[in-house]
Length: 248
Image (cartoon, rainbow, N blue to C red; front, side, top):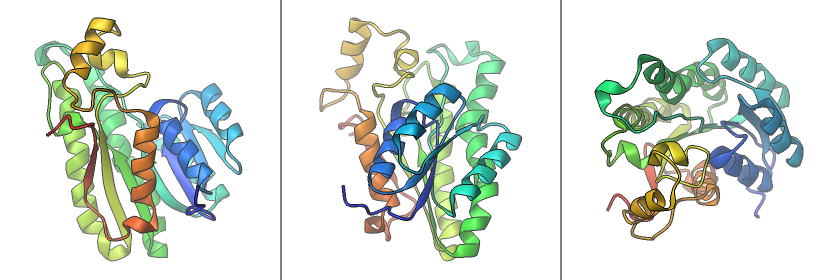
């Protein structure tokens, strides 16, 4: 690893497992101090204890109070240079008119409102310093929707649109904003996407991915690390597909 994030502080939400854990570990391996934010206190602490100079924060990203607490905890670590809005949820595959209101509200809160809340707290700090990077984790679902996941698809389309708008507005302040859009991966959400984790469901889904496999936390972390790095300092407003050709 290059140490390209040495001396930088990164906040990663949903960092106790899956893509978020992979992202946190990659950024830390390259020198960042990482604030590991997640609802799962035990796993967040487990990840943070493995990463030098990192801390765990229990956080419901859909809660303004919790985001305020996350902001305070991060400030105690250092100026936040990198914000990765990774936390996300889905609903079980179902006809769009059969998805319950509680499920819809949860998707709205975690996948959409959380980005708004985080922006309200962290963007002013970045603007004051004239620098910062935000990476939002979207999905191929926002680019090439599949039936049965309409409200999840819509939330990820919103993430991509919000990313582009944020990038346009914040570029004069020296803040870059990009998204990463993975295909379904080997994470705790995979069974929900497939409607159950069976060999048949896996084979059916993988058949739609030209490269013949799911994405992994390593794949997504590599994309985030690139977009967060100075190597990408002329890239903003993009949604980088990490999908093995799924959206071709």
